[in-house]
Amino acid sequence: MGEEIKVIVFTLCEEEYAVEVEKVRTIERILPMTRVPKTPSFVKGVINLRGNIVPIIDLRGRFGLPESLYANNTRIIIVAVKDIEVGLIVDSASDVIDLDSETIDNPPEVVGGIKAKYLRGIAKIGADRLLVMLNLEEVLNKSEIIQLENMEE
Amino acid sequence: MIDYRNTVIPIISLRTLFDCPSPAEDDEGSEQEIVVIRKSDKMVALVVDEFIGQQETVLKTLGKYFTKLFAISGATILGDGQVALIIDPNAIIK
Image (cartoon, rainbow over all chains, first blue to last red; front, side, top):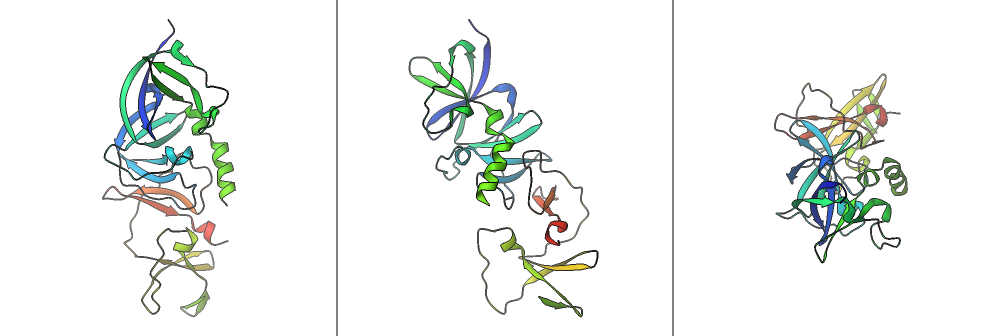
């Protein structure tokens, strides 16, 4: 038995992803957003979260997946990594589950779609359910954002 | 360039400057609102869609996620809960 970790499960393009519970502050429905000019297209703007201004990024856009319209299930997961607080737009946030850290496999060497460095691993639950564990530090990595900004200029 | 109280000052469209998605209906002859800003002796007129009001606010940062924002120095929360971005005139008047 490895360590027990609690994760929040959310979906993005029909796939299930997970982030550690400790990194999640709150989960919100879509709130009115104020667009911030001259930012990468996946940055949707900023919101007023009970008096705090929080930037919002669309995870679909961040990962290069096709962006979709916001539906009833669309949620904003507010995460805090180090001193950065950011909201992630996901298709839906479904559950909180306990994982045995031993069931998390390292990301496979060859991964199509999202680059393997964004992944912490793949967790198997039950017979045929796979959870993609995100490496939020990399997803919110600033140096890469700066590169992206330079690319778009 | 426009003539503003006997001085000629540049006029900038904020929409173009900020790459706003929905283009303004450019109906010639219609009245446009401008905000004239000044930094020391330089003045610039900014074309805006609508002038809403004037108030004193507390500047909040946009968080550490944004590293180098163009012409935005922060944001504030308005009375109705909306977030208003605060323009940094120093970036516009060089």
